[in-house]
Image 1 (spheres, rainbow, N blue to C red):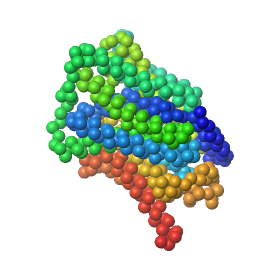
Image 2 (image 1 turned 120 degrees about the vertical axis):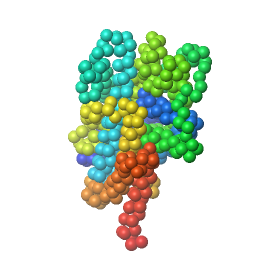
Image 3 (image 1 turned 90 degrees about the vertical axis):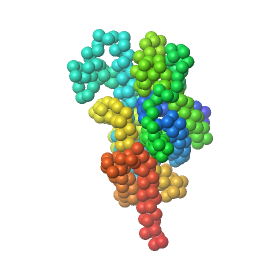
Image 4 (image 1 turned 135 degrees about the horizontal axis):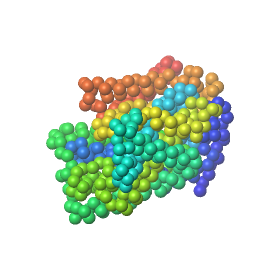
Length: 480
């Protein structure tokens, strides 16, 4: 184990959680398990399932997924460098681009989106518990009826399961980052065993018979197939967009960038595509084994009606989803809300704010159907994508990979990241312009063909706007 000491900065922009880490001991295996937790979730399974039931050829979907995960891998490695170098989380790192006070805006954007994802993942995990309870205790079926016993779009039984998972996550989070690391070290890998067990049981039930022909066929032309595959890639990038931006929160704990890159390689391209193939196999097997295509893993486990698979599968699905939820959403939102007022709001208090917000958003209304899944991904992606590209363009092109760590916590007018009263108007303008363009793409009927590409459009335009505005500002100062 390697340790690296860091100086604790003082002042109103710092607290013990936002300061550079004092010790770093995350090895490459921790990042592999982190990605397993981020990929192996009910939301990930549902998202992949929705792609394979769009009517596109299987090859086109797989090609889009390969393209997307290679880009995710590249972007995560790029995002990791500055945070691993400085040992700081995203809300502090983004101060270099937006200014020490201006950074509150992109951090809040990320925080609100993380709360939305946190709520969605909590609800999806709670659905598995609801199905589990109904299977063993059918007498409580009336309490799962929204119209008879429900409020705000969720049944009484749904509320109970949701709050149960909500409390479990809060308990793990409250124990700190090391407890989170240990939790995801086993939660992510466990899902492989469950899906392999389920696939073996389904294959036994179908006597080994299965074929891709059970998937919907849309009769797409070659150009439409190509466009659809690219749409899958863009939606996958949107799905990972929050995790890409959040990755600095975990890269800061890495022993070295070599460990981070090695863990990312095994956790992203290798692990993700292995999970994709397992999901595809399971979905295809549900048709001959259970009578219809099912993209919800919890429903597949329940309908299979095997007591062992039902118990182990439900517990593992819930644990894996809790793993991604805490690592990808809870941690980042806690940092973001703490960043609003570091002296007054600790990381744990920020997490409590995030958890309450997840209830108020009623996430079950955001992710209930395939068309809503894609719309949700589009809207979330168009806000996060430009922040990601602005961070990367600023660090690698504008700042040329130089970083003044002390200035990240300084409110002195002559500090490097003070800009104008602590705000960099160029970065804010780039973010605003790219978000407006993204909203037009998503909601204007004339641009409907581009809707699934909102993440790509936001990422490209955010970076281009920031680079151009920064260059013009430099030219104005130097007279060139």
